[in-house]
Image 1 (cartoon, rainbow, N blue to C red):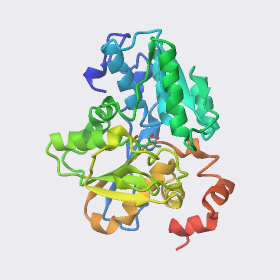
Image 2 (cartoon, rainbow, N blue to C red):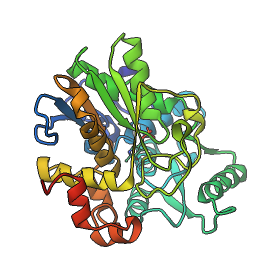
Image 3 (cartoon, rainbow, N blue to C red):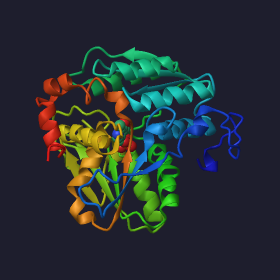
Length: 343
Ligand SMILES: Cc1ncc(COP(=O)(O)O)c(C=O)c1O
């Protein structure tokens, strides 16, 4: 973590080998060369394993950064309550951050939230506010309405609003991509990033441009996502894509765009296990398949793929044969074929 993340709300000692609180363990995630994932052996493919953040995902970074900046700017003081709508990784990252900084956390979720994530948020001290009814068929609208109501109820509540907060991309610009660039200075030809708020991709792109790097930043989005002029449709892989264009994503462009189907994400997860013994989440599977789809043009190049989280969060979905049959209408055998595992 950069020094500018150190704020005077806790006893930090950033030069020590021993972290003084769990948030000091956010970042410095490992890079792993994937030697077997692609058929083409002359692509130097490296994965950034964000599951090794203490909260289990890349979202630990913006969660920490958004809250610590708000504390620095006195928009928040210990004892206040953070309110956010999230059913996954951001909720977990915020619950962890709030616990360290003596803040309360209310997480607004809807019935589609994965129960495992909700339980982790609760276990980390977050209070769960369940929205039971959609507004005109839209649960996101219902969750945002509830956030607004909770904010109106008390003046000591703060909404980070990850989908509009500039400190979301800034968190990645000052940590994720700095770690990659420090390890591989001027060597990354392609960077593959799954998108939802687009915070990760924006932060990485902006830092690379500032440094004058020629890296091609490839945004990986879900089919059925509204990002990048996409048309809204059914999507079942959580973490990737957006049902509604987030404020942060408006007008954003990247060097390349790859859209992946839900089944492609699942296939990537299977292939990562079979070829590398690596358990990745759905968006990670999609990102790796986006790389595989472009492998011919990557010959002789170095490509880094950011893997946002672990498959251990998706045992009841992406890794559940019955869920795949029910939600995606396909079989494990078809997925293996798509993953190129029966060749
Ligand atoms: C698993 C996973 N992958 C990818 C993303 C996309 O990250 P961003 O919101 O920075 O675009 C998220 C964000 O929630 C995520 O949880």
